[in-house]
Image (cartoon, rainbow, N blue to C red; front, side):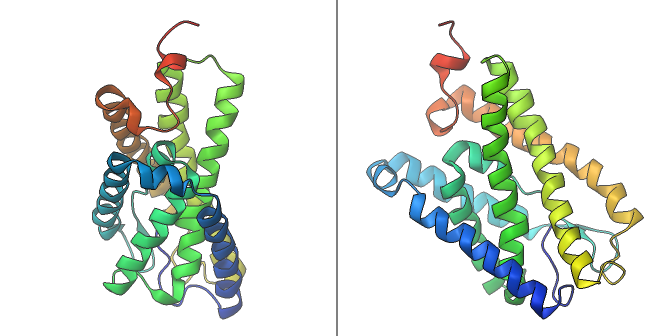
Length: 222
């Protein structure tokens, strides 16, 4: 769901970069660096998550020029590491892809905002929303927080991309219309399945890797 070069006006690109930069600054400031540096296992999991993102974000489903959609996996990244480390990881992956020519440096800030910051913050909010209002059990966490949350976050990220292009007046240039809104629900389901599989396997085999999952809360009666 990366924004191609030329689809944003200079002013919109600057505003998007500023907002994305503020999100990254808060993430860098609020990330639990001391705990992260003290836990080598979590460091390797974090780096492995970034490697997976590099592979996934290098692939895209495209129908027409300007219309490309990728799985994000930001929901799983956020639930495993927290939104601060998720945003930092996403920024580093975008930098690698931009250096490799897969993404555009000119769209880095807007891509950071739409692809990382917005879905990550939405996932963090959704997790708290579900946690406060629904029973605490594994199935709620897996299907509502993870599966449904991933689909919603994917759509929110897509709509953010559309909003920036609408403000720029380039919706027609980006072919964002019936084609985009037809593929978005299909990709949303795939996004939900991919994130659900990652979270499901992590919880079953290494629950400690998932920061937002407390087995004492979700698996055992209090």
